[in-house]
Picture 1: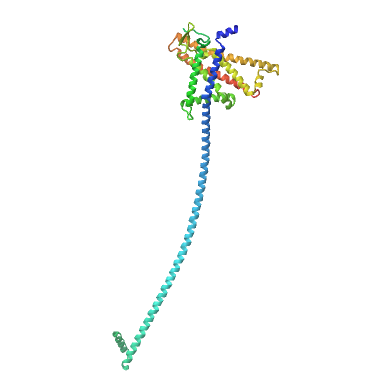
Picture 2 (picture 1 turned 90 degrees about the horizontal axis):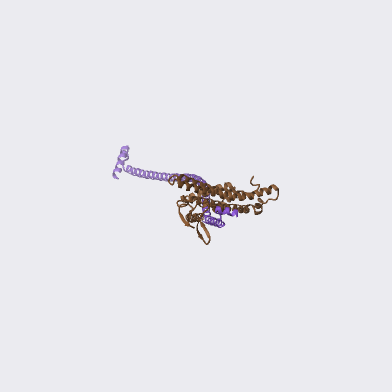
Amino acid sequence: MESGGLLEQLGIHWQLLLSQAVNFFILLIVLRAFVYKPLLNTIKKRTERIQEGLEKAAEADIRLKEVDNIAKAHLKKTDQEAIEIIKSTEQRAELLRQSLQKKAEDHQKELMAQVEAGHKRQQEEVKKMVFDQALELVKKTLVKTVQMDPKHIDEALIKKAALEVKNHE
Amino acid sequence: MEEISLKAQEIFNIGGFGITNSLASTLVVSLVLIAGALIIRRNIRLVPGTFQAAIEMASEQLLELMSSMLGSMKKAEQYFPLIATIFIFIMASNFSGILPGVGSLLVEHGGHEVSLFRSPAADLNFTLAFAIISVITTNVIGMMAVGTFHHIGKFLNFKSPIGFFIGILEIISEFAKIISLSFRLFGNVFAGEVLLTIVAFLAPYVVPLPFLGLEIFVGFIQAFVFAMLTLVSISLHTTLHGEEH
């Protein structure tokens, strides 16, 4: 009973001990369910999200670099293609220019030939007309000369006759 | 001056079960903590506010401390509720002892005037219950962690006379733990209560203020010490012999 007396003096009762223990376990269960678990889950979820965000950011950086490289490659390829197109266009333009020039020269030569031929023909026609007129003149002059007195035939008379003929006309 | 009593006083009786002022305080503290838990649960957000951030920071600090002592974060998370509840409950109980009204509100019971509330840890039932819970729980955790036979083998070792003697010492140390844990907490808080009562009687104004500050500090430290000793005990019981070195 001495130990019982000591416990009594210290105020220790098994019912109170048990009630304190039960109280603690109830509190433990409540705090575990309503605070610790949700809080740790939230922290874990947030950590995961942050981790995920960092990973995605790193992935995005890599993607961005890849896209940048692809864009640069495309740009380079496009530049080369543009240069090729310009070169080929220049070549084609040069060929076209040469061809057109040749055609123009040919056409010019042809025209020149036509003009020359026309000119020659006109010259021939003029010559022929002059000759014919000269022939006619001589013929008429001779006729008038024959009609005149042969004694007085001299150069002045012939000239006079020619003038007369001319005036007659 | 108010009568200083070593044991908690009964304030009323329910069906032969005497409710002491200390138990009443414990119940009030528990209800406040449960209400706080419900409020926290309702307000937990993925993007924390100031209060939630403070709670999270404290939790993470405690988890890191536990992790460094237990050797892994997984273990720390597993035993976190027990250690955190011990710490929070004891600290809240200690702080409740310095609230206005605790010790000064009186009720009449059995022809005597007794305090309505008394600091929970100023009652050996509270501290002893916690010490018993701590020792039993740490042993159960030890059994679950290293195996029942291996754990019991620490106490009942028949391989050699030295081992047997060490086993006996281990058993004694477990009981000593109960006594040391309970009386350390009880002694500190009860001494604080006595000190505050005497100082408040001798110089009721201003002078008790530094002692109240001291009691806040002691209340925090004692809760921390109790939780840490439980944690050390868990750490020792969950480590296999040979892992220690």
